[in-house]
Image (cartoon, rainbow, N blue to C red; front, side, top):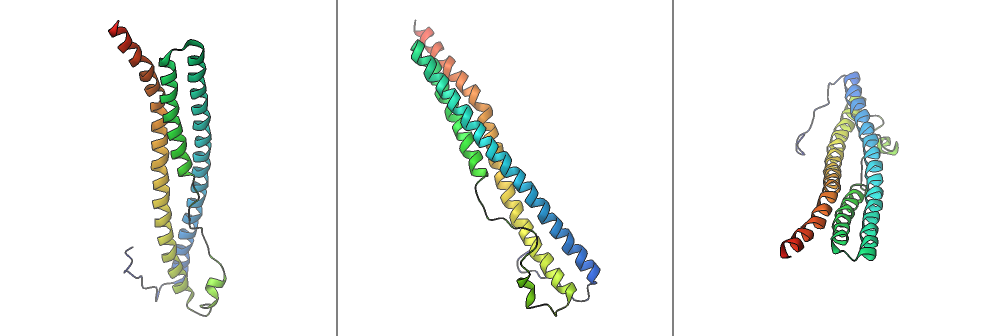
Length: 175
């Protein structure tokens, strides 16, 4: 609904207004549950990617320390950087944000407690509609970040393998 549009709630049956209100309330509650699950997933992914990045970097340095071969070191660094980037993007997706919840403080209704209930429920349903749209935008933004983190994590071993093989090919062609 556009910001300048207003819904006329006069003459609307209270049961209809309550049904619309209840649907908005339920939808906001479901969005909150989805957001909590998405935050948990993003946080777990950030931890996993950080652990994998550190292990990959450590393996590259350990192998280099024993063999003095640059290819494994480069592979570890390149794959580690991709995994660190995936961890950062995942952590960003789990960042604290403003998010709308269902319901509101009872004191918000005190001033209008003698008003038409259908109109009040309708007005709150309009508020819910705006909150749902805001939450959807935020959830979509975080979903795109999680997809980007997945892509970075998937590319990490491929980039690491290329970083290992390309120097070997270059060195063998020079010989």
